[in-house]
Length: 611
Image (tube, rainbow, N blue to C red; front, side, top):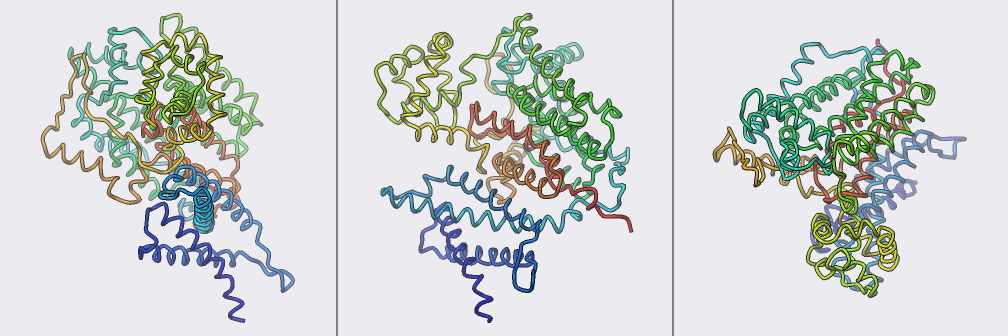
C-alpha cells in the first residue's frame, strides 16, 4: 500500500530531471558538475512540495474518486498556460546557448525539446506553488483589517512627509549631477528650446516646450544657464515626488498595508535609477509619471464602478484621467498608440458608464491628434523622419545582408537607391538600430519615403525567403522588453560632450563621491534578486502574472489596468531603437506597485470583517 502511495513521486522525479537538464544547459554547466545534482534535488523537493499541495486540493467524492476543486482547477490551468508561455520565451531567447557545441540538427531538436519540457515543468510547478501561497496569504499581505478599509487615509503629515523623504533621497543625485543629466537627446531639445535649432517632434515637442518654459523662467530669475537648467531639474524632481506620493496614498486607501507602502517608498527613494532619472532631462521620466497618474485614475474609477457608485460623482477624478491621458499622448511618440490601444477596453470595462466616459476618451484622442497634426504643422514643428519608425524592418533587412544571404539584382539596386548596401554589414548591430537608421539618414531617405510600396514589397520578399534571419533580428532587437535579462543601457551621468559649451558642474565632486556612485550603479550586477529590479523583462513577466492573478481572484475588471502597459511593451517591440534601454521600460517599472496591489485584490465578499 505504501509503495502505491509513493508512485506519485515518480512523475515529480522525471519532471525534476528535465528541469535540471534545462537549467544546466542554460547556465552552461558541464554534465559532470556536482551542481547538476544539486539542481536535481532542489527541483525534486520543490516539485514534491507542489505535488503535495495539489493533493491537498483534491476532494474525495463517493469514497473512491478524487476531483480537483474549482479554484484549484483554475489555478492549475493558469499555471500550465503561463508555464508554457514563459517556457517558449526562454526557448526563443536561449536557443543558441542551449544548442551550443551541437552541429547535428537532430541533436539540436532533441535538446531543444527536452529543455522546453524542463522549462515548462519548472515554471508550472513554481507558479502552482505561488498561486497557492497567494490564495492563502493575500488578505494578510494586503494588510486588510476591517470592512471600511477603503476609507483609510494617510495622515496629512505623512502626505507632506513622503515628498520630502523622496526629495532628500534624490538630493545627492541632484548635487552630484548638477545642474542635471543631459544626454544627446536632452541637448537636442535644449537647442530647440533656446532657439538654436528648428523645432521638431522627433523628441516630443510638448516636452521641449516645457523645457523652454522652465529655462526661460530660470534665466529670468538667475541670469545663469546652469541655474536655468537646474530649475527644470528641480521642477521635475518635485513633480515626480508629488506623483509618487499620490500613488502611495491611493494604494494605502485601497488596502495596501503600511508595511507594503513602506517597501514601495523604499523602492522609489533608494533604488539608484529612480534618483538618477529624477534629475535627467528626458521625456521618458515625465511620461512614466503621467502614465502612472493615468493608471491610478483608472484604478480609483474601477473601485468606484465596482461599488456601484456613479462616476459623475467624482468629476475631478474624471478630469485627471483625461488630462493624464492627454499628457501620455503628447510626451512620448508611442504614448498616443498606448492610449488608443487602451481606449476600447477601457470603454468596455466601464460599459455601464460608457455615455459619460467614452466621449471624454474620444475627445482626448482627437485633441492629441489635432495637436500633433495641424497645430504642430501651423507653428512649423517638423515631423520625425520616416526612418525613425523603421527600427525593426530596417534591422531585419540589415540582418539578411549581414548574414550574406543571396539577393537579386533588383533587390540590391533598390537598397542602393537609399543606402550603400555594401556598408550595411559593417553598420549592423543586433541590439541597436541607430547605426542602420543613420545609414539611411545620411543616404537618400527621400527616395525611401517616395517609394514606400517598393520597400514594403522588398521587406516581405526577404521575410518569406529568410524567416529565420527576420526572427533572430527581431529577438535580438527586442528581447530586453519581454525576457528577463541585463539592460543594455541604465543611467547616464553629467552633460554629454557637445558643441553648445555646456559641461557638468557637479557640487559633490571628488573621488569618494565618484566611487560611491559607481558602486551604487553597479551593485545590481553583483547582488542576485536585487538585479531583477533592473530587468525590464522581469517586470513584464510580473505584469503578466499579476494580470492572471486578478482573474483568478475574481477581479477580472482589474485586468484593464494592465492594458496600457502591455500596449507599451507591444509598441516597443514594434519600433524600439535599443534592445533593453531601462528608460523605455521605466513606465512599467514605476507603476508596478499599482499593478501588484491590483493583482492581490480579492472580491468584496472575501474581505475580512471586523471582529
